[in-house]
Image 1 (cartoon, one colour):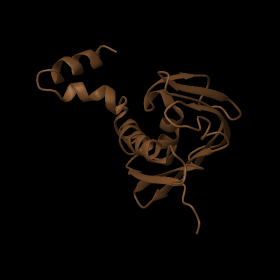
Image 2 (cartoon, one colour):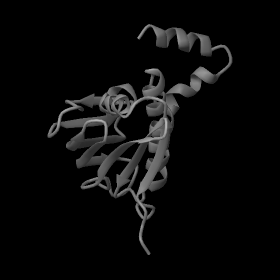
Image 3 (cartoon, helix red, strand yellow):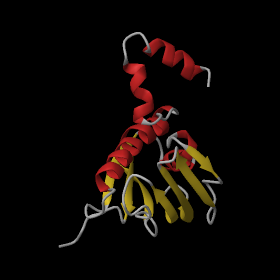
Length: 168
């Protein structure tokens, strides 16, 4: 039996090139600290979130309007026993025109149900791709981490949070 890599698909009204450009502006849709270039073939960038998640990605494919591949060269996931589970995996964005829409197919090659991180990591990717990245492509505004946005849903804090967000 073949083990399936985590995959999710979004459809947007923007062009494939607009989707490509938004994906490469990683800071706009993936929360956390990002160091390095995220839009140049061969470049490496590091993503870190608190002391929980740190990964280094090398951009190994960059085909304008069509495809982006990041190869994970190092990972430190402090919420699972094997903290290096993402080492050697690939994060792939395939972009294609589908009728009057643009399809973005996200696959994390190597993120499979048999590894400990699968449930938490696939859930996080689901949020970042299906909500934050989709909003960033469509509206120009990505979303912060789900845990960071929950307080804004509390009665009375929503207006304060939106006012704070607008000052950024």
